Length: 225
Image (spheres, rainbow, N blue to C red):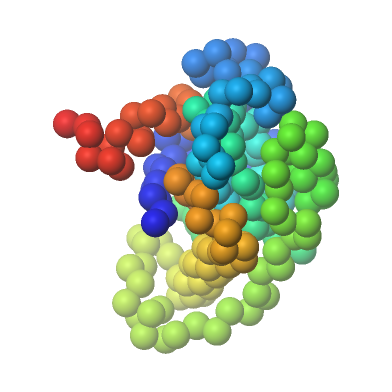
């Protein structure tokens, strides 16, 4: 069975060009830690535990340095070598946002960290992470809205009808990306059965400290207070 970790973002990055510095990584885990650096630290059974990390969103809003330091490397060090799925759309030069009428952020003021999807894949594979996705995920251009859902969705203060419907469309795109995460995770049944930990995070989410994997495992096993 899968233990699904719903990781709450402690800090949301504003725009693709902003990223956390890896010069002083949490818990002393460096951004350059590779699988070969940790040989012998993993479970020695025939099917060592692994983790599945799915990053969803858009290439032009992607931040990876913090996720490597705070998520991928802690999982690796703890013996849960991560398989990574990048469910990222790169078909639009303008990021889809739903809070532009409330939070005045110019998402086009910075150059994206990664020019292409392949650049992100190359970085992760260069650090010996197993990236399961070879091509970008193309978001649906015009999602079919269920009018009942649109009516029931809470309309934020100050939203026009057009902005409200745009928010509903973006929510559908988001949920479709979650479904794609599951499809990639379960594409290989034998591999998927080795996942003890599953993480899904947005492309523009940042974490203020590294995951405490042992604490999370104890909580999932009912060992915590």
